[in-house]
Every structure is written in structure tokens, then in C-alpha cells.
Length: 128
Image 1: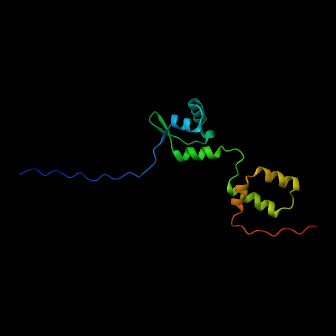
Image 2: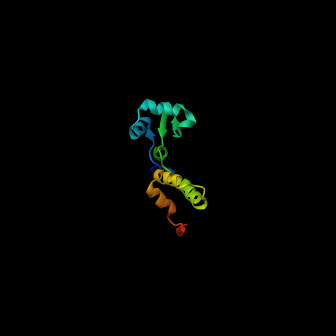
Image 3: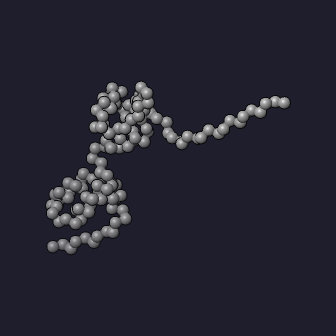
């Protein structure tokens, strides 16, 4: 009679996660030098790019890198900030025409359209 072999238990399947990026991959993606990336990491909380230390290795999550790059865009206005600005402009008569034109020049027209989407359009004010 043959001895019965134990059936291996099914291992718990780990949650599917995206692979982590190495320092070199992040530096290449962001088009910065490896030493610059390391200096940013050494600054600690000021760099705003989260990382994981696995033993002596440093790894980055892809979504964190994308979020960090998006946050580096100069002149970008987040949708909540833009909605707040639009509400302030609508409710306040303290802005001069020059200030309103400067604000308009600084904002991306597509961002304005996204912020205004779904809001009821106010009728134009009658001329004085």
C-alpha cells in the first residue's frame, strides 16, 4: 500500500498590485538625474514623493510618481480651487476689470469649463 501524500493547501492569493519602480526607473521617467532624486528623498517631507525602503533598496509606487509629477505642474489650478475662485468672483463685486482679466489669462480655458460644468449659468448683468 502506497502512503498517501498530503495535498498542498492552496496558498492565499496576495492582492494584485502594480510592481514598484526602482530609483533609476523614477529618475528616467521624471527625466532627472539619479543623484537629484536621491537628494530630494534626503530632504524628507519637503520632497512630497513617498517611497518605500525595502531593506537597503528604495522603491516607489507608480501612482505616487504620477501624482507627484502632476503636482509639479506650474500654473495648474485644481478643480476645487478653481470652483472656489469662480464662486468668489461671482459673489464679489470688489474685483476690477483688470484683475478679472489677469485671472482669466492665468487660468486654462479647459479647466474653467470643467469647473463651470454643471453650474447654472447666471444671466449677464444689464449695462449701467
